[in-house]
Amino acid sequence: MLRQRLVSAAVLVPVVVAIFLLGRPWIDAFVVAVAALAAWEAFALLAGAGYAGFARYGTLLAAAIVVVGVLLSDRAGDPLLEVPAIGALLAGGAALFLRDPRTGLAAWVATMFGAGYVGLLGFAPLLLTIAPPVPATAPLAALDGGRGWLLVLITGVWSYDSFAYAFGRAFGRRRFLQHISPSKTYAGLVGGLLGAVIVAGLVLAALGRSPLEGIPVGLLVGVAAQAGDLAESMLKRAANAKDSGHLIPGHGGMLDRVDSFLFAAPILAGYVALVTR
Image (cartoon, rainbow, N blue to C red; front, side, top):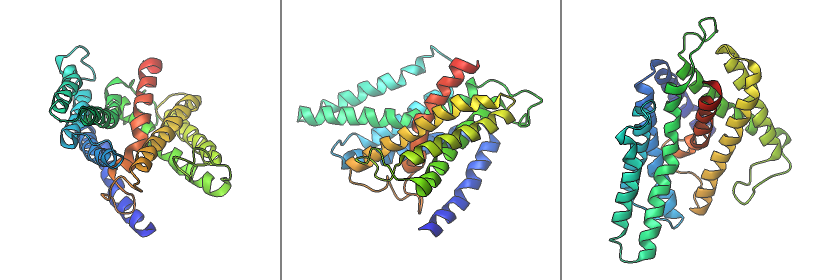
């Protein structure tokens, strides 16, 4: 298992780094593709949990929501913002043709939940538009502001996961929310938040901002990442599934890799929009 994880990481990490360095539109296209794969897995989990939706349509709708976010992140009021609403109407219309009203209602709700849940990933490329510029004197001045804050998101989530795992293994005794994820410990939570704060502070300092800003940013990203991980764990437990899929050997499915980002991306985008602009 460890060998599989290392091989997969050796293949995937350079790809992600290359796409990050290429910038838009590569990042946008990558996020849309990831959302489509994650949505398909989410609908499989929902079906396994007894909430079968219109999986193909919901997957397309999730990808469409991300595309709308990418295209219209700086164009408030554009008619294309109606796409999610139209999607809800179409799913509701399709549900009317199912003979059992309870089945139809469940399919409608599951479709909209799955699409909206994975569609949260659209807040990640939104950072490319709304983030403030990087000062010319900053160590990471070669990055534009959008990719700088996207780096804060990526490293914040990854550092939380890494530190939480390390602290949980070393000091974990007391556990929390065992009915959702038996492996989560308070030590892991504290260690993960500490790691997210430290790494966020370092990256923000390299972007020409105060390293003390890493405290609120790291805490927000860390808590959101943990919540996103637990939300997917609840979905998998309801579906009696260990992983969301088998797309990535040793790592499970795509949804397993992005679950933390689904909650962390909108939280960080909200912080950037409200605090830094």
